[in-house]
Image (cartoon, rainbow, N blue to C red; front, side, top):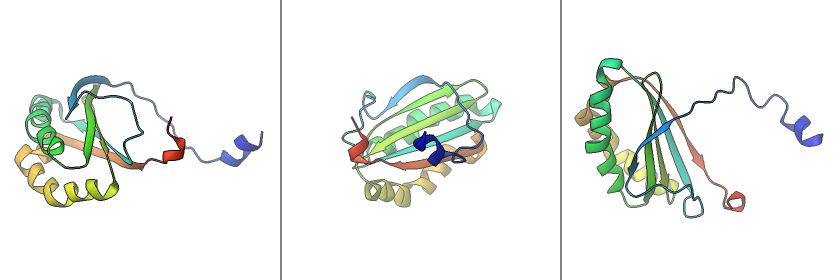
Length: 134
């Protein structure tokens, strides 16, 4: 059909991973998107010997920092096989997320020893289209 034809070639190498919920970031996570304008997803492959520290730092350093940021609504921390983790955070706006990034990330990364823990880090920011939320 026309829709399929228009999307031809838009995806390459799609991958699916199942993550198990570990804990919330800020409040109880709800898959509700009507109050958020932006979602940040970070995928972390953690060195095997550093998994315990990474998880502890997520809970004791990163989680409180995000939870204390105005504009951060809620999020979650999840784990997949192979020492892979996902941190998903929902924000009221790109501007609020930008304030958090600029002011805190470098300092928090040093405190949490993120460079020693993380072998690979990817992720993205998704701006939500209010007309598409249900």
